[in-house]
Amino acid sequence: MSFGDAWTGPVLVTGTDTEVGKTVVTAAVAAAAQAAGLRVAVVKPGQTGTATGEPGDVDSVTRLAAPLTGRTLASYPDPLAPLAAARVAELPPLELYNAVDAVREEADKHDLVLVEGAGGLLVPMGLRPSGEPWTVADLAVSLGAPAVVVARAGLGTLNHTALTLEALERRAVPAGVVIGAWPTEPELVHWLNLSELLPNLLGAVPAGAGGMDPGVFRRSAPGWLTPALYGVLDDWRAWAEET
Image (cartoon, rainbow, N blue to C red):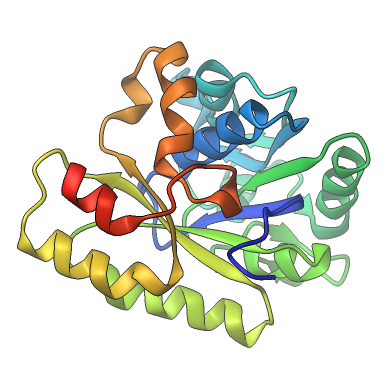
C-alpha cells in the first residue's frame, strides 16, 4: 500500500503514547472520508475511564465528524489500560477475535472502518482465547489493516515514533504518521521534527481542533490530511509557508 492510494476497509488509529490526539485525528479522517462520499464507521474496542461521566471517544468523534456508525465494544470505569481496567472492575476482558469479528462486521457495511486504540501500540487490550494478552498491533495483524500512528509535534517524538513504526514494520503492518496537535506558534524543534517525519507523514491536525465548531471542523479536516486519508494536502512546502 503506497501513500498515494486512499486507504479503505479497516484502518487502525494508534499513537506513540496516550493523550497524543488519536480521537481528534480519528474524527478528522472520518470527516474527510465522508466529505469524499465514503460510508464511515468508527469502532473503539476498549473505552476506559467511564466513571468520570465524560463523553467517550466515540461520542467525541460523533460530535465532530458524525460518522455513519459509531460503536464501542467494551467499557470500563477506571482510566487504565483496557485489560487492567477490566481486571480492576472484575469485568470480562475483551476477547481478540470478538473484536476482529465486530470490525469485520462493520467493514461489510462501510467503505472505511476506523478502529481507535487505547494509549500506545502495545498496550494490553484484552485476552486471546488462550488467555494471553493482545494489543492493538495484534488486532492490526489479525485484520490485515494498515495503521495511522498519531505522534506529538515536540521534543521526544522522533524516538517514540521510530519505535512505533519499527514495531509495525516487523509485523508487516503498513503505517503512516499524523501529527496530532500542530502548535499555533511552532518553534524550531517542531519544524525540525516535521522535516524528519516527512517521509512517513500523512497529515498534521492543528492544536485545539477538538474544540472547533463541528461544521468548521468538517470543512477544515481535508486540509489537514494527504490524499491517502482523503485530504487535499499534497504540498508540504506550501503548507509550511502558509503556516
